[in-house]
Length: 177
Ligand SMILES: [Fe+2]
Image 1 (spheres, rainbow, N blue to C red):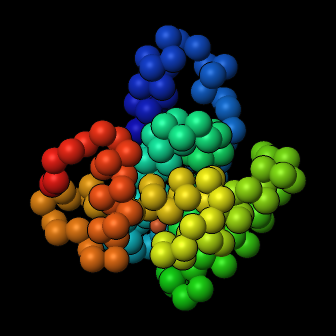
Image 2 (cartoon, rainbow, N blue to C red):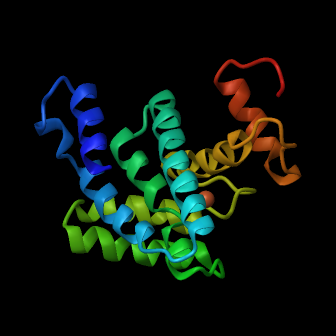
């Protein structure tokens, strides 16, 4: 399986291995290690889908809003990791920020300023009804986008309608799902 993924990565990067060894991939390896050790297969599947789905949505929204795409991709991967690792969603934003700091410091991947940016976004991401910094808002909107696009035929949850509608407008999508 790993060989297959490596092959795809090489293909995507024209055979260059250098570009594969960046901060996003280093973090992904660490996160994969945690997810792969989850005992419940169904929860593990949810973890992969949600964390990497939000991560990709973060990248897209960050590109659109001229925010840091690399850090946005990383915050998406990390934001709910604690919930899946501990199988507990109580105070998950606060616990998630603590775990993210622990991982980023352990891997020495980010500067103090970058770590603060990532952890602040995770700490604030449950407060969808309030507006925080532009970077925090990327994560909140990406979280909503992943929920809404998991299955576009499912009804959008009432508390996510406002942000989802704003995202469609921001991306120039005039039709509704
Ligand atoms: Fe989430």
